[in-house]
Length: 263
Image (cartoon, rainbow, N blue to C red; front, side, top):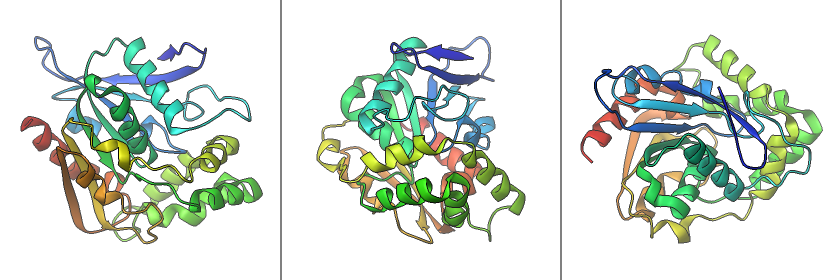
């Protein structure tokens, strides 16, 4: 299915709901990260959708959503406005919001703008600051293309000692489908962004999920995000190196269920 934002952009979304039909479940909105799609949440959905109405959507320029022209002003704020459009077009008054990597950063920015729309916020390996590494990645993408960028960065995302090699190939292939100008366009505008001064005003319950370490710590100290929220909680998965939300989706989803049930 697709929804149309006020500027005409079309965003793909899908709904998973296996709750008891006589109940009125709360809604979860799941926000994927850069150069990905709604498909990346596949491991979470069976756990969550038995208890909640789960909405997954594709960001502007990614997955099955429409792709803007070169020069579109990609930014955290514009992506957060797209997310507001998802809430409004789907008539979601309030929801639990779960974001991963940059999708979590966008979700944090959304929370600083519209916390009244949130029941809870969860981020997974999501940066709160953006340094010059992102502009370096943009140069590499423009020079060598998305597949090369993905190939060189994939093992900091998925630990080959913990996941099936076929999963790594599938994951890389999904990312490689993203138009180069979408990824490099955002990465050129990201450096200098800093969410930390804004997070203290967000009273929403927040869960931060993180691995013990990344093989390359290029996302800053994303674990410290929990410290900036008045109601933040950090859960670290020891012995995991990479994007824990994709390496251990089922344990992450179960941790989330425990978090939500105790709100």
